[in-house]
Image: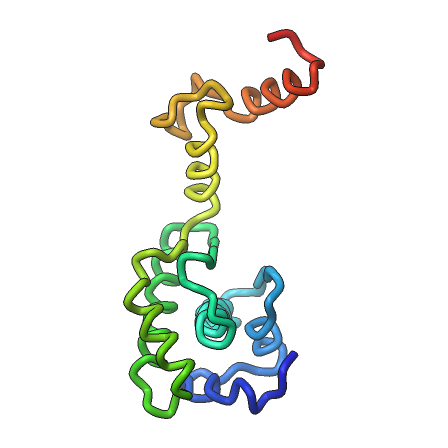
Length: 163
């Protein structure tokens, strides 16, 4: 991890991150943040998103943020947008990071902040024709067992099932 001075701009936030939270934010590897209610998960994820954009130069369209519920996804969307907007409008933010935050705010409609279920559905829709599923399927449709169809497809490709 880089020195604390390198990311000193993170201390501009009202909610300061402790050492463990900052370590989760300031890393390039895929990261899962799991903790109890009220522990600061949303702040850590919002700050991590901003850090990826501002310090690593990752476009918002290349960051995937997943949560369990629609309510959590909506809160995450709002908090990330607010965090980026804060840095974009704060003159104390270093110039390069501020410009990247401004670009991220402008491009924020391209962000991928969604529930696990909606992400799964979007992945299945993209490959629906490979599984013999109509792209406009409904996840709750009891006539379609996606897992069984996917398994049948894989087994057919491996030559272990009749077509």
